[in-house]
Amino acid sequence: MRKLGLFLTISVGVAVVSHAAFVYTAPDLAVAASFRKLEKQGLKPNKINFGKPYKAGEEYVGYGNPDSFSTRAIIDLSDGPLRFSAKIPEDQAYWSFALFQSDNDVAVLYSDRDLSSPQLDLVIATKAQMPSLDVDIPIATLPDERGYFIVRSFPTDRFNPKIVEGTLKAASETTLTILDQ
Image (tube, rainbow, N blue to C red):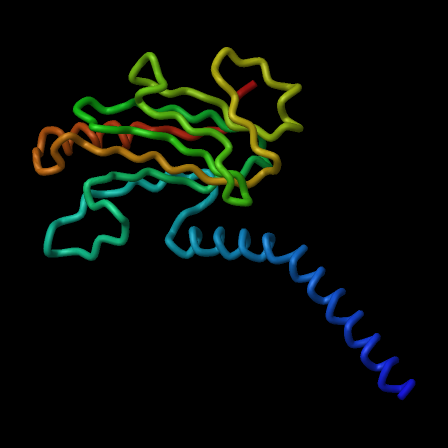
């Protein structure tokens, strides 16, 4: 009977430790999987990926809304803070910039309704990089060196070639560069 009690005690102890280890590491595993998925889609750190409009009946629409245009990038701040600059295109029903931390939490969110001009300029930096910054534009902070952003544009009429062209032109002028200090 003592051997059975000892076996059960050790088994429960191993199960508790294993469970605690899994709960502690699961978020990191999920984050790593999320970044691997982005990289598998062709995203490279600090390189902007410009979305293109889908052609009805010709392409699979992998997003919840085929009327949206997206621009995105993986953020890597290991070489220093980055400067992000984007023009909000005309004739948009909605435009937004969302910066996500490496754990997929939202770090900052701007929409066209939040901005007083049709331009968004900001610096993306870690909290550790903040003391060395001397800039006169907003600073978005990340807790570590990794993150990603998504810019979403919803044109008022995605079938109007002039509006689509303006949306794509504005997206192509979006920049993400190492901040020169």
